[in-house]
Length: 564
Image (cartoon, rainbow, N blue to C red; front, side, top):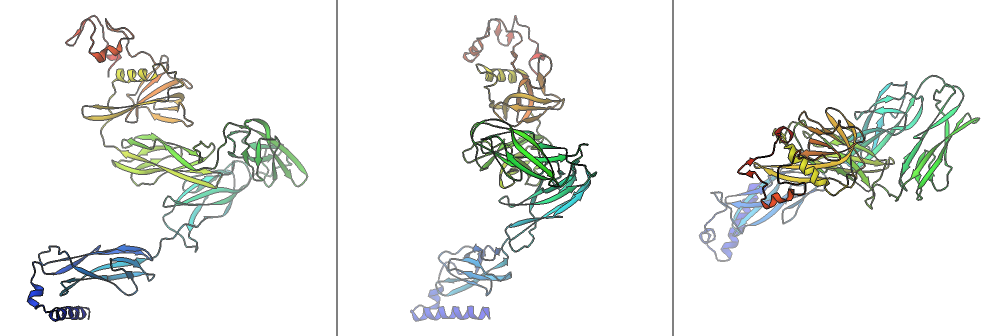
């Protein structure tokens, strides 16, 4: 039937040509004769209500494109609609429509050919609306375990597959939970409402969370004897928040579950606190000893209380607005490591303390990352844009995220360093600058066709072992950890120690030199004719006496002290 109406349409156009006084031979006398039509794309999957632009092109028998053809578009019944320009809009009847799109091509109102494309109409992808944790509550002995599971749903309560979940324990003392949802109870008996939290993320944009409660059982406690507040003190920026928790104990220091707690702020100007113990710092900087008070009540008769101190620092910060990852990108060799750090900021770009961060690798093959931000590269070299993700949470309500990119390099080893050069670079960076004011430096070096990035990172040593060094960089709030290879050079008078100042020099983000501050001179003995302030003469081609044609008479040079 389809071919019949196409033939009829061709005859009508032929008759029209005859009426206009054109002989058939004249109408068809042309360089190219339409032979077939190709529709692009040949097939497409479109969500209900979604659109797809189709295009058609007619060809002669030699498969040469023919310009100037006229096209008419038709969509199969139920599949949707299509405009004269080929823009298809999917209908609401789901299914596959083989050859459901037709493009009728006309040439000089005589030759008629039809091209086809297929469409499949699918349901609209659901949007994450809420999350449920199973079980919603659990009772465990100290150190007991409970496997929790989370599931996200759309507004119609239909489960959504493929979501990413992040687990945490938000009630101090309740216990710990893995990123697989395995909870281990703490050692303090008691009831911990909404202690276990699961954050669900859909396509890195839609974020929802849910909580579950746990009860840690234990020895039957006696009468309430004392109360402890955790933490016992906190330092906050104006407007920042801190979750306090309280626990009452009997005379044997056995935790008592089921107590009632009442919170208050006893120091004017320190801030405010909710009935759940969420403290918000005021706007007046200062130290407020015993400002937060927690009252514990047992059986409406026995009352005990404890206090915690707060310090309100300088400028106020607002709600979490955005997050930054440092560094924003990194080149890492297969199996190599890179420490990433995250910081959340308010809308005025002021850093916010006390946020919770959750790390993940969202690109398969890029590698793995710990919840402390230590990334280990995978074994497949390549670029992995936006593969590192961190989610920042403020007060269990405000959630933001950021990403960083990594490049897993090939098997090319990190260039062996010229120690003299690295020492001179570090010394030049510190010249005329105090160690505390030096915030770092970076150089790009091209040698033997290879490009290397050298960085000098100053700071205070926080931990050191034969295989790693942790440094608090100058001007930053979070530590960085560097892997120390067997050939990493450590220059220190009597061994590097915690709380000493040092400069870490990296080549392509691999630590190659650790230098104690103050920086020792890289030149052990100056050659004749060079004074301490004469280094700049080299740029003018100056050579001291005896330094000609590679000869350096009068200067003993110990290569082992300078070059590898």
